[in-house]
Length: 85
Image (tube, rainbow, N blue to C red; front, top):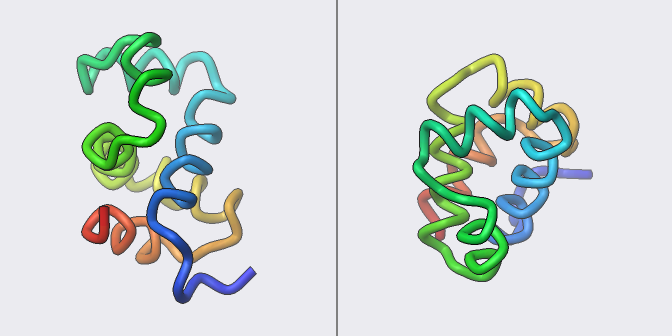
């Protein structure tokens, strides 16, 4: 998968799935962003909520690098997706 030109919302949704796959990481997302499970579900199509997920990853480089590797993109593509949301 090449990183150039990926849809920002699609990348953010993939990143959210990656975050939620680990309970500790998911709990940290909720604690740091103030989001609730209901807000996550309701905001799946909302650029602000998806941007919060990408901000969460960008603020912790180990997670950013791991998420990018899992999604098959460069870390910069996740950061760029945040700017495009």
